[in-house]
Length: 116
Length: 109
Image 1 (tube, rainbow over the protein chains, first blue to last red):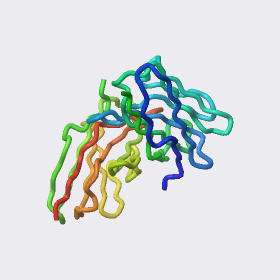
Image 2 (cartoon, each protein chain N blue to C red):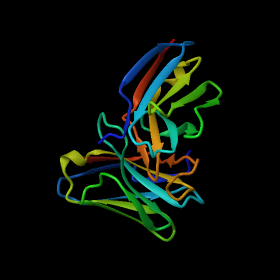
Image 3 (tube, each protein chain N blue to C red):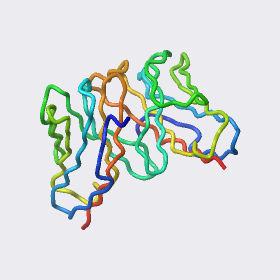
Image 4 (tube, each protein chain N blue to C red):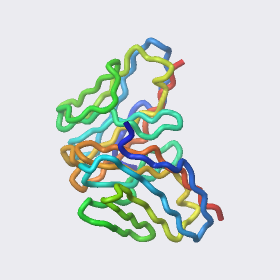
């Protein structure tokens, strides 16, 4: 158990809909990272938050947005869903501010999103 | 633009032999490198890391080598065990953590 909690574990929704994925980081971790893993793809970096502020953005679509709340949990919002958005979405947390500084990130078990 | 590349999608080795997983990167600003292991239906778990000021880091059966001039790192597992069968991701850190595509290692008894 990494200490990172993601809910829900599975989500099935229709095209055009909007969903929210939730991540609770490990206790004491201030950084949350979101990644997308599509079929046969590696882990694509989406976005990083540190202590409530956006720190870095990757290849995140405009239809996707995220935020980190004062209690440090984070939500990833996916809207106008398309079939191609079906993927595993992972969040990870770390103590550091973004350079990671010799600390590793700990991953949740992921949310499997299926768009039908 | 794939900044971190693992060119071998899969690798099969015999139990007891050495497994060598390779990773190349393009950005010379990366200052910290990590290897993660992932089993099906689970999130990636941290395995071993190396700072850019070192060229080798060892932890039990796992050793990571870094060749900065070639922008190449490798993970050696010796001896390989069937329980090592998983997908291995290398990652590079420089403000954000960028992952390669992964290499699926299969260790056969």
